[in-house]
Image (cartoon, rainbow, N blue to C red; front, top):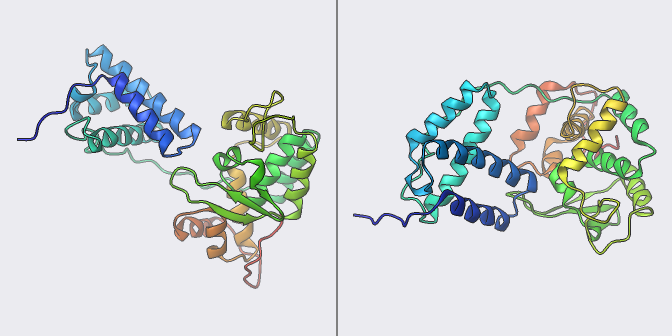
Amino acid sequence: MASLPDPISFDTALEKFTSHLKSQHRSSSTSIAYIGDLAQLRSYLETHRITQATTVQTQHLEEFVTQLGEKNYTPKSISRKINSLKTFFKFLHQTGLHNSNPASPLTHPKYTTPPPRILTQEEYSKLRDACRLDIRVCAIVEILLQTGMRISELANLRLEDIKKNELFIRPLENNPERSIPLNRQATIAIQNYLSLRPTTADTHLFVTKTGRPLLIRNIRTSIDRYFKKAGLSNIKVNDLRHTFIAHQLSNGVLPEVIHKHVGHRRISSTEKYLEFIKITATTTSSKLLEL
């Protein structure tokens, strides 16, 4: 008979999990989401006098998920929280802190994913006009729009990652490192920003006025403000990535070229955009378009 793991408090288990996330180079936004979801679970368990992570069972988690539905959380939000539970208890089980994975039987609620929001040329031109006088945001917008990189990858950029006509993207979460071309428009925007960038020992490319790294939530807030100023509605920062991919495909750039450029793990993730666009090019190309 297998021996039971020593009792461990939920708080201690959460601390160990947080350290694990850091060792896996998870983005700050992912880590914050996981910890927030698990803190919510902890509060629920405490109301039922459960303080030991080792005593949590599937029934407890199922009741927690049911309560989320009763509180009118959307199926998408519930699904994300279930992902957090599965990742957390898988870690506890694999490290011997729990004798099973009580989250394994949990099933995700069904929900439909809306089609990607793709900006027209007129819309992203309006965004450029709106942020033209904000040199830092202008550089951020150009990098996202001209490379299609993830916002977490942008926040993780360092000064030494900016090469001549090339950008080095560091490994993050389960995404390997890669180098991508840097076109003229993005290069000019970066150079303009660097000429005004605060002097600081921190090597992050984008920093605050006091020289601290610019956090993902600050980047989102800044760009959201200019979306509003440009009169653009129903749009999020990640839609700049959607826009890059869609416009490249519609102009005949091969999916396998875009797939490697944006860091999709599977080419099918790139090809799914084909159902949302109209291809205007008469020939295919391996050269990326400057938006």
